[in-house]
Length: 392
Image (tube, rainbow, N blue to C red; front, side, top):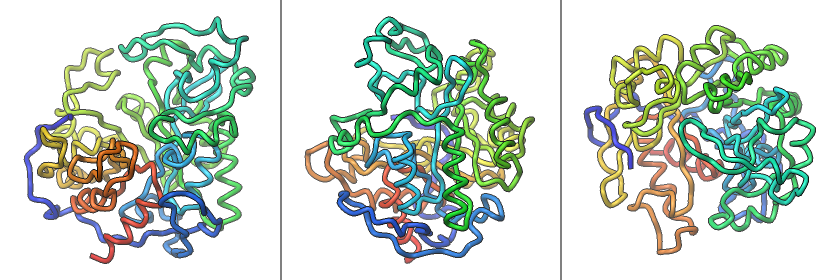
């Protein structure tokens, strides 16, 4: 697992530890019965959710990773709706472009594993091999389809071997455009009497800009159309490429987050520009101050918060939380999942990699570092863990 070079501290001693403002299970009146681990959430909060900008969000903030991807195929309206019904504070979208320049919600432009495109003989000739951010990939890609063509496909579960129950919903939803998600969020916001918060990521922005399909300008145009471009707008903008966040900072005032992968990795825009800095450089105080010039937060992988030992168990927390807070940056690390295969070794239960482990114990360990929020595939579990943490 990735590690990083910041100094270390003892668990639970972060100066940045925030008081939890409540699990905020608002808008969860819709029953979500029949799901393993899904709780009925009837509590409501009254924090002026969203009206005061991101600082009004409960802490720790629960970000629904690609919706409720632990229960529904990721990046579908069904996944987003369930996340909202569970009470997730923020719901994530990853955006990639179509051939004709529309932004659609997919984790990757390679749609081989997340749609039924392979079952469409009319698109068989579109299968190809490409290099995306230096990685060779063979499959079907959104930039080779018009929106009308893409809308003939149906979404499916990406990892059915791990999440067999999610495959029940294969074919139920199509690939949503970002505009459809914005329309959905506005409709749900009016119905619930509060803004629906989103966390929108530009995927592979340098790669797409070279294809003449830049992401930032159409994203900014959509945000302005829906009034979500302002400082206190209910959405975060995020990217693994700092230059994309810098570009967005010139176009809109909405809060922005730089995503950070493993410590030894380099953002792809750095690779293209010949910038030698790695993530390990960016998480040092100097690098954090640099990012704070154009971003309000960072989204580090959880291993940058608490590195894992050689046996896969959690080690000692680093100073990244305190260092980021000292630079006036919030932290929304990624990603907590309930299944054993994704959990640190000391929180796994039994030998079945697809079974749930001690996710609550892992959430507590991460919350104790003082993080401001967390991405989770299981929003209900994350919200209950946040409520538990509030009682400590």
